[in-house]
Length: 264
Image 1 (tube, rainbow, N blue to C red):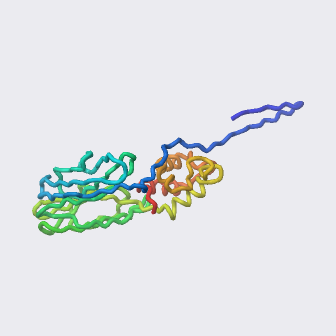
Image 2 (cartoon, helix red, strand yellow):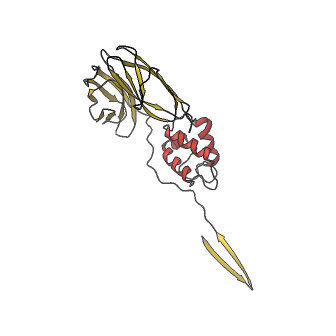
Image 3 (tube, rainbow, N blue to C red):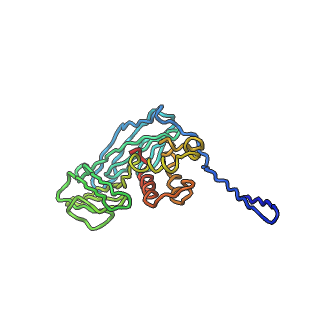
């Protein structure tokens, strides 16, 4: 703030000049991963036995720019070979030298025990408890017992009243054979129906992030790449400039970002 004092006789006039700027940290140029997308081939998968960790799988990536790094619940390596695995679903992510990635889910089953066949997940809503997980099992010896987050086992295969988050679901048969699965319940906030309108009307406005100042928040790719920063800045009140979002709008942005900032 700069103060300028003009004196004319006994009259003092104060001018307060305030400069408001719309700034953002600089980011690395974005890579267009659609030009040569990374693809994953499952070359081999080997089942395990109940209570043992002898399963394995082998994957290979192509496309993008080598070398590749493979990551799953079983660890990270550069050769795509994962062994000593218990039964369950493993999500493998292959990332190339430019940071482009692809993923595939590989099931490792129990040879003679219970196995997970299907998971149905309902969204929770933002800040709500409407989430639901329903699992379908087969194999082994029925009836099965189901539990969530190490809670009390139950005979029902549905868990309701859930908030957004990641849950550990366990299914056990009568012989004690178990399978454990991590299940994510999303809030389900829509970008098209909720977040897009907030950003277009409050952030990508004249003189601020509408093309005149970087980043250009008229582009979904830019919004998605900056999602974490947008969440932090709107939550703190430093964004948007010159206006205030309601708590419901801030929550919607936060829930959408926590869901992975999908184009939904």
